[in-house]
Amino acid sequence: MNNRLRELRDARGWSQGELAERLEVSRQTVNALETGKYDPSLPLAFRIARLFETRIEDVFIPDVT
Image 1 (tube, rainbow, N blue to C red):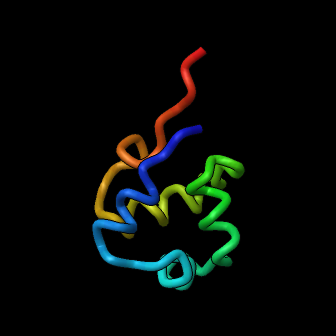
Image 2: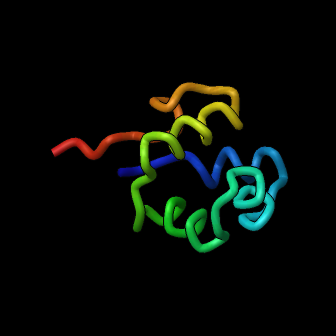
């Protein structure tokens, strides 16, 4: 699944570590999310959307096959 997490994080001037602290996850989790190696759980996806004051669909873009 593609996402705009890095773009949203950069717009706020946050490091991966800062975002991880705000989401209460590890920096490695943020890195895996940004690189598409990990799809978030639904509760984490909601936390991310709330943190960036947007909808889940505006953060995560499903792969179209």
